[in-house]
Image (cartoon, rainbow, N blue to C red; front, top):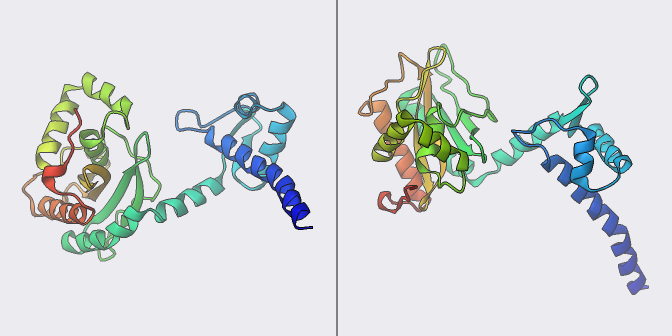
Length: 261
């Protein structure tokens, strides 16, 4: 009886495992550069029949993990993926480690403080701490994806990410003397203050390291009046001090930082 139960469990479990694997394969087919896919593309990715692919996409749509556009006949990731992504980001160890440091910085500078990680193609905001004492508050949505070369956080990652983690950045650096100069400045000061201002908002950012590797970028976001561009400003110094303290907690010393070639 025990042997039959084990065999039955395996027999029943195998299709279930295959179902999960196939569903995961479909979801993993969507990327930032390819956010929309046709049923034929999903079928090819799945390596199964079109009828099987359609059955899976129907089940994923029912779970709000996929959406379908009747007009274009294309699939894209559904809203439930955003909920799962937010929960995954909230569980990242760096978020938990950075929270008290971010809250301290908010109190010290009186501005919104944001933490971003590299998602493979660009910085993504994983935590935002607002200054609730301001009459006008600047909020940054968790999950926002930032420009890798014009945002302050993006430029920090440009300065410290190894080329194998961000191969596209190497091409951008080779094409832009201004960006190369800015990256050298960031490496020298552990700070980005020269990112473009948008809609009256300015951001300064600094790297957070775990051991020798950059793990996040912490930024102060405020109006162009409130957030100065000078590296020697009290606000910039407070940001550098907080990020260096957090980095040291994560096992980093300034001399241990690996600078990409």
